[in-house]
Amino acid sequence: MIPTDFLRVANLHAFYGESHVLHGIDFTVRRGECVSLLGRNGSGRTSALRAIMGLTGRRTGSIMLNGREIIDWAPHRIAQLGVGYCPEERGIYAGLSCEENLMLPPRVGSGGMSVEELYELFPNLYERRHSQGTRLSGGEQQMLAMARILRTGARLLLLDEISEGLAPVIVQRLGEVIRQLKKRDYTIVLVEQNFRFAAPLADRMFVVEHGRVVCEIVQDELDQKREYLQELLGV
Image 1 (cartoon, rainbow, N blue to C red):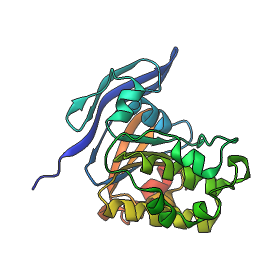
Image 2 (cartoon, rainbow, N blue to C red):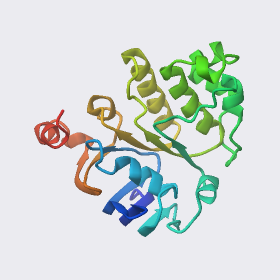
Image 3 (cartoon, rainbow, N blue to C red):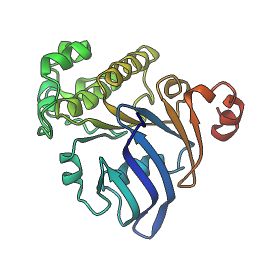
């Protein structure tokens, strides 16, 4: 059976005001696949996620999601198709408890995880469920940001720099969670600068430079192209 593209981004240009940030970026994601957008800061990886969610300014090109063209859709309509966006800044409400933050977003699909399932996936959150958002560590906030979109029923997860600035033990736990989500047939786009975190998780990697994909590497090619990747990414 030929794998089908769940998400297809083609010749996508995006703008913030007069600033042209994506210059014809192209990549695809198959259902149940984890792909990573790799690149240096300012390369356009985060802008690609924001453009998919309709959070940039003007966009041209094509964004096909499960057979639907969504290039002109508003962010709330895109979310209702089952797209969950976990931004780098996490968006935790300081005045709400951990559990109140978790329960805040509306459900967008029928397959959302229960609170009990999420506490099993992220035991730290159960322990801190009554703590205010301001009292959570960076790692706990990142877990909460991920748990929040998993409760909504989203099946396409757009994860932006989830490992940045976190302790190695937390980064390892997030990697284990992504592996479990892949087994549950979630589709994941992982924006990362941390190559060592992303490489074992991703089925395919797209290197982004100046708002374009300059290289695609599948998991099987990783060893032979590691030196080339180090040159591109500076790792």
